[in-house]
Amino acid sequence: MNKLKILMVCLTLLLVAAVLPALGSDWPQFQKDKVHSGVTGDSAPIADPNSTISWQHDHPVPSGGMGGIDESPIVYNGSVYAVIAGGNLTKYSLDGTAAGGNWPVSFVTNPDDLDFQLATPAASNGHIFVVDTGYNRSLDYDLYAIDATTGSVSGRVHVNNSTGIQFLTPVTYVEASNGSKYVLFGSGNMSGWTMHEGEYYCYNVTDPANMEICWNYSSPTGHYWAGAAVIGDYAVFGDDAGNLVSINYKTGATVNVIDASTVYGFDVGKIRSSVTYSDDETAIFNNETGRIYFTSFNSTVNGSCYALGFNASTGSFVEDDNWSSYIGCSTSTPAYYNGRIYVCNYTIDYSIPIYEGNLWCLNESNGHDDIWSNPASVGPVQSSPAVSTFYGPGNEYIYVTTNYPTGGISCVDSDGTEVWNETSSGSNLYSLAGAAISGGWVFYGNDNGYLHGLANYTRYDFNGSTDMWAYKYQVDTKPPSTATDPAIEFSSAEYNAIKTDDDTTYASSQTTTDSYYAAHRFVFKIDDNEEPWIISNNGSINVTWNGKAYYSVGGTNGATLYIWNGTAYESLDDDANGVNEFSLIGGVTSNIGNYIDGSGNVTVLVVQKDEQSSTPPPAKVSHIKTDYVKLVATP
Figure 1 (cartoon, rainbow, N blue to C red):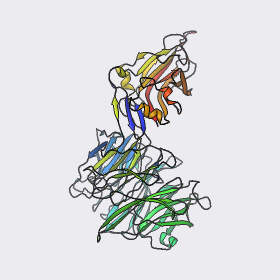
Figure 2: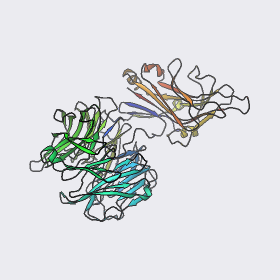
Figure 3: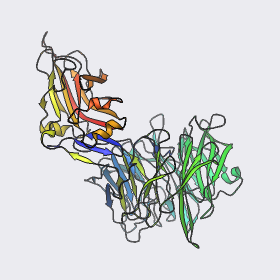
Figure 4: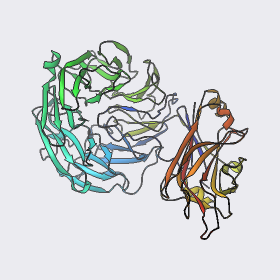
């Protein structure tokens, strides 16, 4: 029988049903969102993984390929997607279970034309939007819409037929206020190390089966890694000549083009980072505008990080609101949080040789007051920082990957101290693209074709008497006065029905006695070694229940969520809802020891709001249907 599991993610104890469900928020495109913030409120591992990888999958790299996984992974609807050299899109659950069926999905038409991929995909509208980078070959199809569930190709379009053109930027996804959906991406013609002409494209993907081009913008120097940030109605991106462009993404009208070298008074060189944007009111802005951030380089050792004012209402750059900070050669997209800019650089001098890199923390107000810089432990950093703010302001953790023969991933705290790094595994090698964070996990890939999922996990499967953790039927008062009602254990089929949050199967009960309420009781078992740790660290307990609760004839639809506090049931959430599925969410943040009994159990209860009545006819029956329940305990 599938039963409860306890999972400890970083410093978070997740107690969920038998199969790990979708946890955490999406990271559905490069640096998480349409402005490439790189910041999430989800947790990520902050304890040392002890040089072990929670899971890894090796993907064969085509002969002659130039890198296994050179795009950041993305996370969408509880699954991790990664693009592999050779044109395959893979899919895994957060805990590393490979998807079956059509997965992995090939999006190249000629198996002999296999090479690297650099255009991080974007996910929404039930699809993964993938662009084939295309290295020195003529492409039949360039843009694909792949069903995120089934792996079937819903649509594909031809973008450009030139054998020299490569699609080298992340895909940016945006949904307009009218519901129309778009993707944007750029290209360039690469000859040796020199970038020539290229274009930026915008496609309407509202109907994935009929994707249509909206506009394209020609650039004499092309775009490499320079993803567009969508700010209001405007797409903002850079190019290899150091220009910044603002275009109304809905109409294709060019609003503003500036030469960054003119603005900053020196040769900024190539802009090979994506643009990010913030309008945080705690930062210092002129004329109530926000700021964009980007990096550049003009040699293998020289480069800077930049801030520039941007008016989101007009799409215009505010040129007199600017700063630059010399950090060295950089292709890293900056991440802004709480008055700080996190950004990376790399230094490569083949003549010495030097292979170095840093993670920088800059003061957003002027960029010159360096708060700290942390030399990366394993070499050059071309990736963009992924930031977890789960642990509160001043306690953020930053994750960067390193592009080096023994490259891996490092976790650095908000004081600039490296907390841990994962470099010892033989699977680590040249991690170029950066990481994605979701639900306690951090994901990254490397040139060996390995996709990694890291988390601080201990996992338990209950046996014996501890299998009895879910109960059903009725209670005579709302709530009951004891922690043992109702007392009929769920059947095997009912346990299976709530093992994942799938919105289609339920564990159900209805009352059969007048003046009684339908109810479901759940007992979560906390491991003996972890119980004192949770209690002594000023922890909190949060409960989420999804399901249906309704009165068959008249009365009130909805339910109340309770937790047992040692002497009585305490209400956490109450909702009078319709017959459709809804959620009850609540928690406690003090005296946590009162809620964990002597056996390490936490008991929660869901009770339908109205009691059963057989008079007058017809009978009014109280119903509960549970789809999914979880408890999270956090120190």
